[in-house]
Image 1 (cartoon, rainbow, N blue to C red):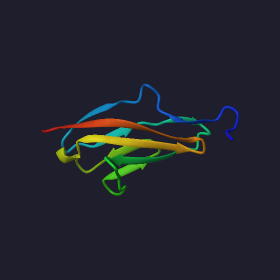
Image 2 (image 1 turned 90 degrees about the vertical axis):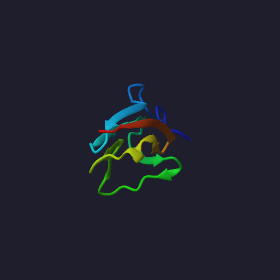
Image 3 (image 1 turned 30 degrees about the vertical axis):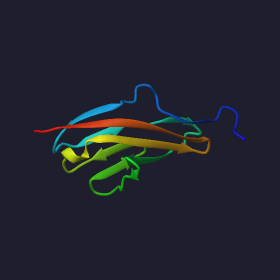
Image 4 (image 1 turned 60 degrees about the vertical axis):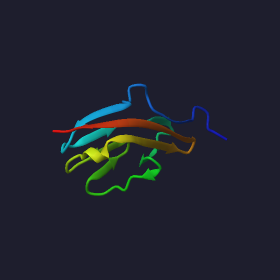
Length: 100
């Protein structure tokens, strides 16, 4: 049973669906969700595989940063999943990497 006023996460309409970046640059994606309760856990996916966070891929809440030079083969659709005690939702963002 959900608490009164409780909501699963949702992504505001201002969250981007496309990101354009230059090859060898740093890319930061901010797809922060809103929810009540606000205790949200995020996971990032490319296709069916969850991204492995580490030196090049860093996450802080709904913000994913790709450092150490974005590569052309990293272009494509990425999915952010936001979860809380009320449920989960996803948001897709298409990353377009331009060659230098």
